[in-house]
Amino acid sequence: MDNYKPTFKIDPDWEMVKLGKVATLINGRAYKRDELLDNGKTPVLRVGNFFSNKSWYYSDLELPKDKYCDKGDLLYAWSASFGPRIWEGPKVIYHYHIWKIIVTEKIDKKFLFYLLDRDTDAIKSEGKGIAMIHATKGGVEKREFPLPPLSVQQEIVAQIEEEQEMVNANKKLIEIYEQKIKDKIGEVWGE
Image: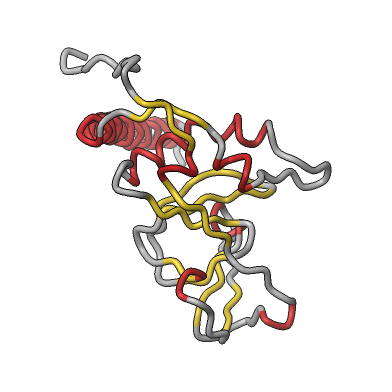
């Protein structure tokens, strides 16, 4: 790995900030059962859809603008299942157990995505509840982290994404060779 760049080190001069000072967390909406339709005007993004459930509900409700999310919005699931996503789907209404996160000019959205992704296990471990663990908005807004200058944040994001591209390429290569092995075994066994 001759092209590998060293990991960024935290500069002691970087300001320590609370998440709530550089981003606003907006709760989605809770729904009554009769408001969740099998088909309708707008998909309703629930935590299950966030991670694995491909079954969608819809709504014909007209809601305030902040209860919708669009492609590119930073979201965070905070109940039962945890984690951030940069939304890649169509315009949706998002459920109460998801925050839409609006960043200030001090923080890069993707940088915050990677910070939250890295911090998700800690956020979950500090969660409340017994049957369904959930994070509190106030608790997450108080989380502190060092904030590098915006240009350094963008360099960090670029490095992470470059390395993720290498990981993805290697995963694809592994899939190709695993299939070749299966094909060869099939030839040997006459399948």
